[in-house]
Length: 68
Figure: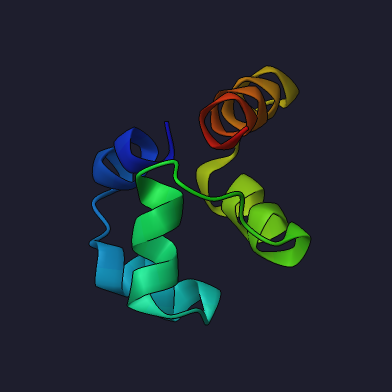
């Protein structure tokens, strides 16, 4: 979901990593739903992409199911 939002807003992975002040590798893991972002990073993503509570819930559930 984050990857789709990023593409919709026209950001590259590198731009997002810089915007979030995290490594590109860390951002790629978030983009590929391989890892949950830290709370501060998640809050930034919520603000950048204007995520709804429903979208946030789906995103978190999707990742926790994959990494469980």
